[in-house]
Length: 90
Image 1 (cartoon, rainbow, N blue to C red):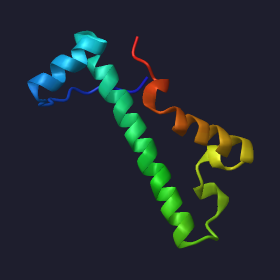
Image 2 (image 1 turned 120 degrees about the vertical axis):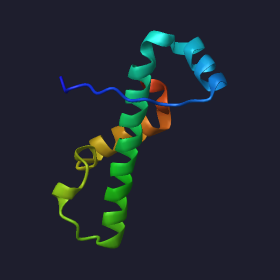
Image 3 (image 1 turned 135 degrees about the horizontal axis):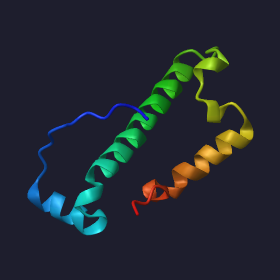
């Protein structure tokens, strides 16, 4: 497990109240971490797509692992179409 660090975040009161209604106060950090992981993954994928478009000869090792096979690419597309609900906060 990686080292955890404390972060001070300011949010609108109404946004926090609605979030707590769905996940509760004890899962805020878990939700924020999950959302940041999803966002970072989209950023990495965007970078990979831009690199491929800029230079179609980009080596395969620069392509995200799940895009290296037709099955992996199809699974990635299905996951994207399923939306963010694949990571429910219990």
